[in-house]
Image 1 (cartoon, helix red, strand yellow):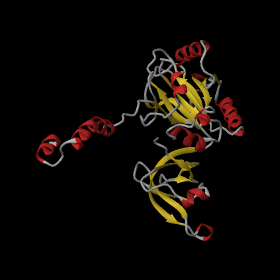
Image 2: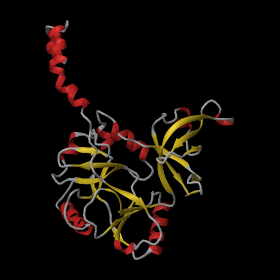
Image 3: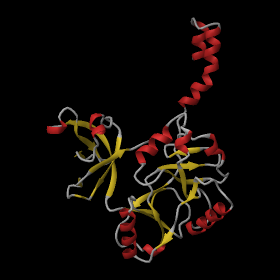
Amino acid sequence: MLFAAVRKGPLRGPFLWALLLLLPAIALSAAAVEPPDLLLARQYRAGVDVSAYWVSEKLDGVRAIWDGRQLRFRSGNRVPAPGWFIEALPEQPLDGELWLGRGTFDRLSATVRRDPPDDAEWRQVRYMIFELPGAPGTFTERLERLKSLFAGGVPPWLTLVDQFRLADERALGGALAEVVRRGGEGLMLHRADAPYETGRSSTLLKVTPWLDAEARVVAHLPGKGRHAGRLGALRVEMPDGRRFVLGTGFSDSQRRNPPAIGSRVTYRYRELGRSGIPRFARFLRVREEF
């Protein structure tokens, strides 16, 4: 229909040729980005046989998947990393987190989204690897392949996440307390005998001193007292449609410029009440789709 309109309408000469040359780019930009299939964690619950899992620190980073040609965010969008960062990656697909260190998520988020990238900032970013996407065998066998890959020599910013075993829940509690004491987020448990899989599964468990979840912002509630004239709280909606008010955990900057209506936020809470509403919920961050 476009070409018919061009033939009948006033779009002729140089303008027509410019439009035709732009069509491939327009079509490419309109194409939907497919997010990669990933393994997503479930929350740890008491009674799990801890000895059946490998354990690692839960990193407060940005998930990044290398398919052998392109580094992508969890959303499927390209990571605008410097050329030297991409060129040094192996042909082997990798799954991991871009990471700057404990308590640096906001700074990391700004760094990995910036396009064009800031070379000096990226020199401080590490790609923390914990999985071989699509590889055969158990997770233990995939870990051995990862160790062999890293033994062959990799750039210093490409790091294998430390994995260790624990005997029982008591040992898990001690390890969790130590990680949190040092400023960490918590722990991850990956079942040792699990084949590679994707989707949300108990194959992968997250252990933290708190629970966390996501909700959609549906309203801004005005502040009172010292928060007068800026955000007082967010009214948010859980995936099942229930709504509650999220009023703590915001910085002064976030109260002046609150998360947009419709955006997704992550919050922490202690437990669910009888009505299914989170108790002691606290805003953590805007869910970055990248």
